[in-house]
Length: 483
Picture (cartoon, rainbow, N blue to C red):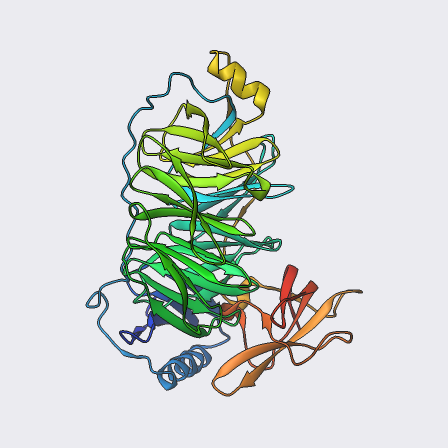
């Protein structure tokens, strides 16, 4: 606080039960300094501080910010009177494995908090935990970078080569560039359980058994309530959205046109996986069931010895993997014959993915584990011979990236570098859209772009744009403000 200055604070909230808004906006003026704090009600939120040439200019800027929020429906409120959004953290138990042998673990990276999020692609392994940390590693376990997000990570999902992290704060962050940004904002009355993104369309399953669908511009498209609760599975492709819950799996038309089929599973669905022609539901009644995407018919059942927390397949579904509540991991052939069962050597696998004869697990003890799933390694493990698992350590100077929160966080440039793409923020009714100015692009298409840094009339420079199915562009590379 400046000596002798008067500090004024204005606290506003926008909370419309059932309509999705559940946010606060606070403006503090201290002499020439204006501090804005905003975010989900009940959370710490993001903060931006700006210093002006005089106290009068600071007051004028603050008044403009407040007026803008009031015009959008924000109203004065008392902080702490409204409860924060509901967040259900998955309650899991993890008993010791009953397997006679331990899986051949090549390396293990301990994140420090229970982890559900995993994604493995051609170059990287990604893990996200309930502390809001997302780490990228190479396939040998080398830690490359850390993203620090505002709340716990529910899951990591990929759409082409874009990576998104769904968080407890209701935001879904694009992690494809060094500076992550909130690409989607999920309604406050949705207690998020799981997410999937397909061609820019976000599908959200929740505690109440609802499925909510949001487009690439963060606009609500449609919602359905399935005949069950606790929806821990959602997977999507061109033909349907597959929703797994306590009553089984329900498939819906992608455009919201209605239910395509419903199949009751053996127990509550706790996890889901998909291949081209089938979806796989891991259940609380110790099985994984393969369902035909076309009809919902149960094609095969894979029997485990405890509740199934996670499952995955090798390409085409040749092998089916499962992780149970007793710290064991299984492999089956396509028809359901159990090939092996091994202990994880740590906790139970809450998510998993297979790639290039390796099985990657994230576990109840917060570790990302790489298992050698080759035939030779598994045979040796069953006979009691496993490699010494390497414990991966964090680099001393690990790069850490936090989300873009305000225009001040974006670098300003005088001119667009050669080959860069120029974007412009334009008013479209009550919403700010971002369109392409550079030649060679469809100027009518919208760009998926951080809402936190949009300003009317502002121009931005990005390294590249990629056209996505559905008729919009995604950003690749850093975002800079063009003066």
